Length: 30
Image (cartoon, rainbow, N blue to C red; front, top):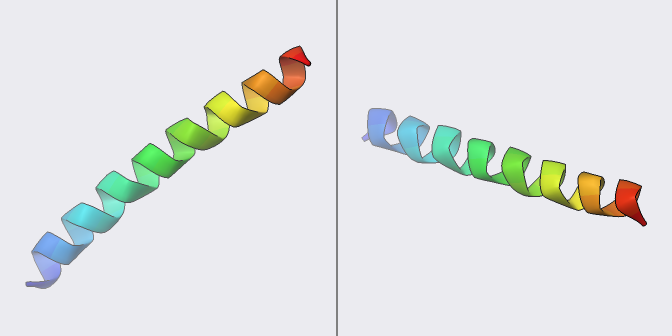
């Protein structure tokens, strides 16, 4: 169970990091 939870957490972390980079680059353009 914990292995699956860790896998989901890592996946979400990468997705959130990607979204953050997109938002920051969009803010830098403006």
